[in-house]
Image (cartoon, rainbow, N blue to C red; front, side):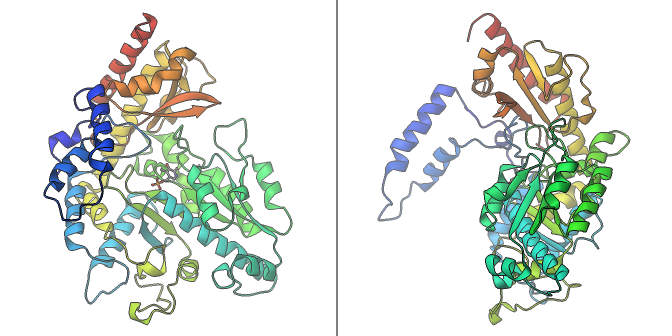
Length: 491
Ligand SMILES: *Cc1c(COP(=O)(O)O)cnc(C)c1O
């Protein structure tokens, strides 16, 4: 279970200076030594020293990146996973329930997110949304090449069997492109890993919108001769939290992709949770994520808004046959490989990157069971309400500018704010040092970013414990003090 101290902000436990001294001491003393020849009795001291020099993310006022915290029941389950040290790679229903627990957690997630489990037969836990994006692009790559072959009268030409260059030659295709808008950096990384290359990622954002495709440009790219496409849609852009997955819009993209044999991958690392919110209270968020169900594959994260410990990612796809083509761990009789019956649970090693793997489904199972649909809706509602409260306050304050901002003060519609608040200081001198000033307060932690080529600050509300009034007060008092100190030239 989490102790109280763990749920407080672990940053700068006493003072910033002392924290810096502690880090320096660790680097130059404890960690500069050689591996002991004989085992040491001081390991516990080392663990304590190290844990005091790591920024924990379990506190509700940790607003960096998008991290989430850890529900107590997930922490308990995670300890149990370590105690069991079970390897969840082969479905062995006579000997272990682990794969059934994993599949139950994955089906419960679909239920929470209002997705039909009959559509999403390829489902697995990964190490994070980056790994899930790799799965999505790997499956998409196999599908689009196979589909190009089919359209040229060739059955079963797969990248999985032939390799990328031979498969492309066989089906008469010269290139695979990834069409996207403001993708998370991990999409480019994933495209490198699966052999398509970062240059294959083409940003087709409509410049008049923050995140949507320029549909005419998308059509033009899809029509490119001898080229097949994966369309990667952002659901939860990392700076603004905005979505490109509204229902009508996704219908149009789906039609275009069906015409061209393209695969749709949605990167919904944290955005997907908007689907569990009540539509009456959060219409723009619910509509913004309604089109996800039209995708071929979805990447998401457990260790962010679901508040289970690192590392836990989630992947779903509608094409289990593709998964078993790409990830089949062929030729290992002792692992009981071979293609499985699509109506039974797949052995995880045949549908994902890893062979041996942690029982990382258990914390998710436990947290879903303990909180239920109501509990998770409540967590997400509190996160959104905290973000909106902070955003309104920032928007009214003359020292700060809420982003993306084309409208000016006082007229901003908060209904499209999800759980990230993007802003900057109106004064560029203050803006340059704002992230450091906020983090040096020791009361909250934020990440910096760039927006419209200038520095900006992100406050990402992703902890299960947040209380809108309480967390907003922390933010307001820190930002108010910084604004006052700056006005009086005290910083
Ligand atoms: C965080 C994030 C990722 C990467 O997820 P990891 O869990 O860090 O691997 C990918 N896409 C989006 C939109 C994200 O927010």
